[in-house]
Length: 455
Figure 1 (cartoon, helix red, strand yellow):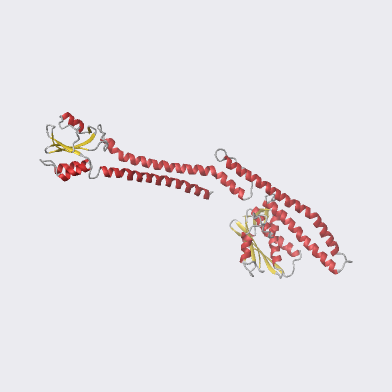
Figure 2 (cartoon, one colour; figure 1 turned 120 degrees about the vertical axis):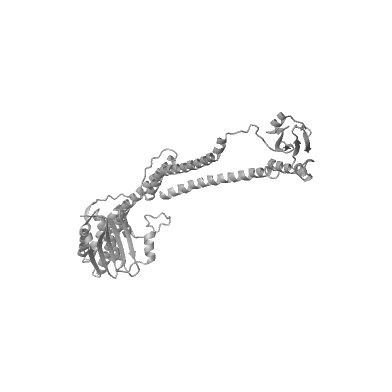
């Protein structure tokens, strides 16, 4: 869920950054577009500059040829009105422009236009200097008056509006992120549950209802597949038991028949022993399947692990373990009174599988160590041996490669390992964890960690 939240945050931040970049691009395009116009119209040929240039060059005989040429180059006409409103001199004056004006005429055109020509005026010593620019070159506001307070408030107002917009965008981003996370959290939790192989029933209305229906449909399909697989394994296990029991019975009868030859008795005993292994394998397979699909009820009760471990070691020795194997048990004082809620039969089964694994992989014999230790709220059951151990490659394969019951590969890597898989399933069904440590020619050590409480 955190990863999904980071994804949404990244997506929304990208959107926010894109909006900001787009705004900056718009400002840049605006500046380049209108900046060129402003620079051109307010450059050397701007009304202010031309009025300054002409006024500085003005004399009793008019203006210099250079200044006159500059006016012509920019299509600007000019005239000088004396105090009586009469034109003393002019440059490129259009025919429709009068040469005599009353004070009322001057008051009107000085603010705007003269015969649709935008005009600009300046007081000089000899009268009134008037410059006329081409039609449609400038737009003048003849009624342009504004309250000074309104002009002063424009910069802080624009800044405040921009800051408010940024805050609103950020709040919308936070709200959208929370809403998306809240709406998708049930879906992500259901997908996580579904990925663990457990069924889900998701109920969501609105825009995400279609996704919820798809998740529920996938859950139903997965449940049917798991149920069919478990039923098939259970059915095959049941069907194998009857003929297997007959084979074991006849093999045991032949092995104990004194009239049979020694070779036949020996072969019959081998058949009986191998049939017993097959029977154990079928039982393990059925139990693993039930634990895998949560079809095995756990009969939990308070169990004192120190007593359980001692009882198991005693039963193992009383069963007549070969002399080339030794069993040592160590229960630390901190674990002596530890009690856990567990299924004692399954925990004993897990310990036995580990011990039998040590015996199976060390036919030359080895020392087997059983220990019990407690640290804070965890208790650890350790089964170790000093046998041949596992290579780094085999240990990595054991931890990383899926068991064939869990494999999604069509090739189905049919590895055995039911014993260790069963141990892991039992420990995980009790909320614990399993860790295997081994090195070649240095033995193997498996630690089962469970939650506990002390008496």
